[in-house]
Image (cartoon, rainbow, N blue to C red; front, side, top):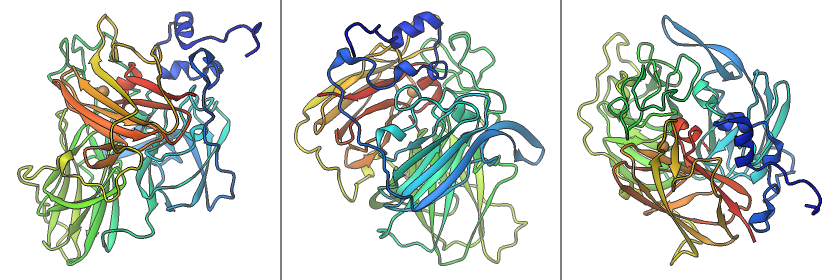
Length: 480
Ligand code: C2O
Ligand code: CU
């Protein structure tokens, strides 16, 4: 920057000027793009975007639309291609995928490719990796779809994810380590009929937002006023049917695309063999149930050896809505039989059960850099969530250098779970390789390790959308 040029607005300054408190409100500010805060060490240039011809080209339109999650329910939402969830994008591992997003909304938007280690300029974080896409504009995201796995895509502007701007992204492996005959994608979501907003009274009084972890209180949290839980966009009154044939092995790809829900998942009458965590292959492990937070994914294989009609059921572990449901129906069963409900949670998956087939490179031995971070509820009147006492965007970046083995140790000083997500990288947690990990409440501790192999500015944040919007995020920034 030439010495006589006026210093661009910092995020802190911008906040003071506008009184803005949400990411969405900041989205329009061009001064937030890389290069604006050169007082913090020289920034390392991100890996550039992919320029080769795409193997697969898709156009998506974000716009208003109507959803019908149940027989007598319809609400207007914000959707991709008027579908809910958005269209499934499916490509082969290593393919170059090009997605042209047209913004037909009345607000700015972006897409984030959750879990895919894309080049920084197409990561979709407004004000950090790109200018948000203005109404009426089109933006092309182009990246190599790898590694294979179950991912999803969603808007990264403000609270737009909870309006319905989400969809699955499947990158098929060339050589799966498990056999299966058929697969289904199962997108779990919490259903908000109204426009999402942060709790206005600071979330401490409980207000009209009931449920959740005791409905508020000084240290707890309030739950958005959800009107139910969804599997593939449908309420339990109108469940989707997954047809199976006896003897088949069925792969289910579960995506927690909810904004504020930890789901506990079971399939009545069947054991599940967990084969992938956040898309990454693991040694198969048999369980009766698993719990996962917003942003996590699990693939399971189920042997169809128990003819009948059975519920796939997902309970909100932090809410009291009736569970989300779909039906596994064997070919030849009477479709009018009432499906069976799952029994007790039985054997539950633990993170310590997960053993990645290939561990991460660059994270053995002791780390080059360690961050100890405390996750907690902010003080004061407004609804805030903090990392080490700071509220994003008014927060220091975590500075790292290319090639480093970076460790982040988190301690959760609040009573609620925080599913923490790192953009642009996988991390090692125990023997698993993931991109999102739940840090349990009441002083829960989780340590993750990653290899700094993807320069740029990456968001690290809680994937509870309300916690993110209320400040629970940091930028991980590569410097020299
Ligand atoms: Cu799926 Cu920054 O998030
Ligand atoms: Cu959180």
